[in-house]
Length: 491
Image (cartoon, rainbow, N blue to C red; front, top):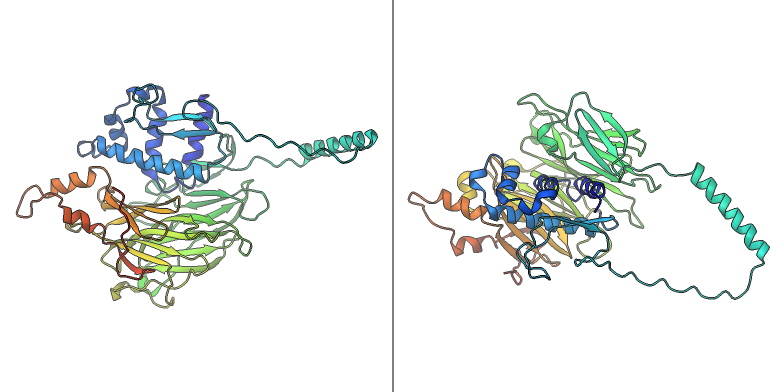
């Protein structure tokens, strides 16, 4: 395939909402793309050095396999939604299964034109139905005149009323935000003299593209966080631009709550998504805003003009947002994951009905209860167990990367949280929110557990009882029992 087309497709994926909060997967995709010309000789050691430069000695091929599987699922999610009309498909072949020729696949990543089957033969398209014969004939003069009129109208529309290129991609270049169309052509840029916080953007900015006003023009939402001096923290600003780059509005989200005890509010917009319009509701912006460094967290719903419509407060941090129609009623729900400070700093998952975003979460620890906001009515609120390793070494575990595929909800819970996040336990729930999978992703958790408990009086290997404990997902709201029911577990 043409290298430019592949490069444009990679940029399109990296700038998508699906990959907005997946910095590690974006980095992996970039590594694979950069090595496409030599990918048959690309070794796991090289990938490990790129993904975990500070942890090369503790990482192995199993960790790469886990990340590849996560990337494979993320690409599937992207092409099911945002990328369903993209001209190029990026896939990760299974390198452990022989192909039709009996040979193992050596490539890590494959690009192919949309509609091309795995064997390279184009998929057949549905035949165009034959038009029904006309019941009467039009006079030739009328047809010619009508054709001429339509041609003139079409020329005028194309010449004078053509819609300009629409924003589709964004990147950070020095102190500038650069906005491009789907082909990578620069449309406009905005310079931020204070620069960008390096820990804030990783490899991609927090950005969203879409039609907020229903007028066929693409707006750009950009969560800006300035570079800060050491030990300083500044709030982020959510900015909305028109397709031509005109600033429509900007907002500092979050708010003052008594629990801040007079400390300056430094809310950062960590999660950003937009609810699809329905017959009764226009598009609404969902912004998850966390007060740095610990808590609380506000999930705000805003209208297309940036005005807050409603808000939900949570005692912890909800850094990841996903939207999906979980019950098939045609309306999207809000899925947020992160940490619940009021419940022993456990990883948490919250599902909100977008028409019932209000109040504050109810906490068992009074020092973390938010007052003056009313009582929230979450649709679902889960707590994930902390492993013995996590309790021994870290202050909390953290739920990340919520994804919804074929009605099933998947989430990863990081049990190692410093100096870098890792040791994931992978969970999956079916459409009825029954737990159908709970297992350590790859060998990372097992290796960390074995290394920590290899000496001393507490020395032991990961037991079956400890693994079974991962299935004890507590349900605070939305279940008929104290724990999520366990369905038929995926082996």
